[in-house]
Image (cartoon, rainbow, N blue to C red; front, side, top):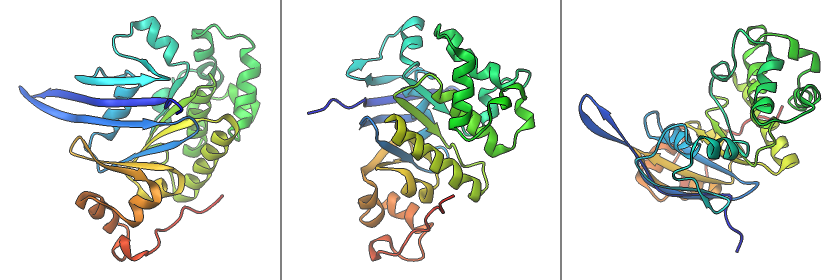
Length: 266
């Protein structure tokens, strides 16, 4: 049996808020295989984005374990995380959050290469810009000179430039117009096919999730209440909260087979 690329086991995170503990993530467990898209869905405040940050070590966990390629990430020092993050990258909802507005795009794309001591940086920047649908000469421009969709392409390029195995996509299209969403989703799927990428795709938009995900996990109040194959979740939901989410986008009960609006190709 093949070892999953990512295994999350009873992951938990408790914050202190006004002197009281708040459990943002509560004993969440799932696995993600190489080349697969595993989507984490739920309403705002459900704990899905916190889970993504815990997986990448951007937020320290209160309990549980994350394994990458069979290796536990618990207790890694800074050097250990630097090595792991070459294979685990993130795409943010707002690409400007990962780009320095005072730096040209080329520098922001070269920076991860410099950190990891990788040569031929100018060529790799030119190549990755072309792969995400931009021009090599765009490296000389600043982030504010691009549209929202173009900035998200730059965010994808930054995540991809180290040739990772896993990319955590945290609401990567929620701030974009529907037509631009389609273009970005199709780009992500094309890149996945080309490089064998795995995606942990975090979203509140079930239409987007049905378009891109192989499997889905549903989060509610910090707990993973249901998970399974995408079509099974959409047509035979097993939890009341999953049915509640689906009823918000379907004109009829999901078990009736009523279609979900597909994201258009583009």
